[in-house]
Image 1: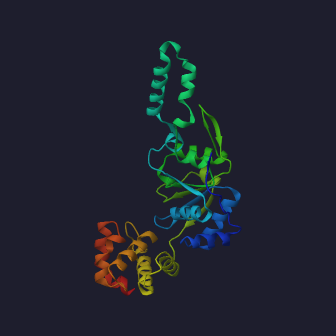
Image 2: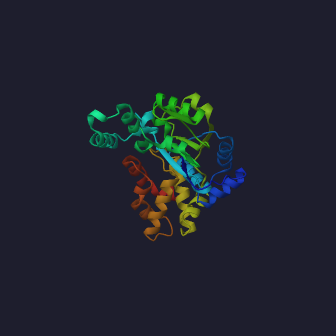
Image 3: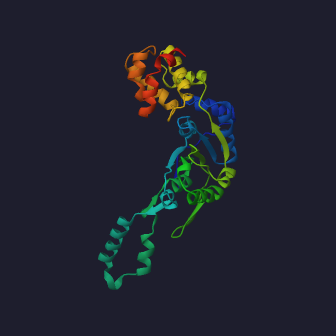
Length: 299
């Protein structure tokens, strides 16, 4: 078992919101409440929403605010249980076996004992899920679970129902204290109902203009107030413009950083056009917006 520094569990949803704010993350009341309830009830938290709404950042902020270790599992098409749980260090096992043979020779070799020694803890390679179960306290971030397939979801459901896994060579490993589990989904496909029922659920919206201004000024305290207001207002308009990839808060933060590096104190058409690459990631979106910047900035 790996021990991290003791976690500080907030006493209320408001205490959690305050602790997250201290890390630079500004949750709305609904998100802070459901996150606190998930911690108290030891239930996984499933966050769905558009990319860039702060789903992944919540898990990072909770880990920082509570003193838990953040363990991240990035999902992708084709991921399976072994890539999430554990593997054996085959190279070291082979070297270990050769060392035994060199010492004892073929005739004196106890085959059964040699086989047992090959599956010792020192040859175990922890993957994220096993590491989170063996680390107290921890936050397990299962990022973009919608990219995985049905079989992997079934595996997650089993693990999250018992917070235990069985390794045939070592036995059952059970979490001393369940990790705080955050699953995120960009809803590229529907997550199955069985997994949803195991979790508390929250849809994460893009922030309104005023809240985004507050986020920008909290994360980047040196940003000129007028610039923060203009970037937040323009990002809000871009999200409603039917783009292929609307900007999230992360892109707004990058845009402000680029503008302040250029010495801008306000957002004008020329500077906005020169820095669109910070906020728009598709050529079609950039071409469309570039020809309409005057109207957007005026709006």
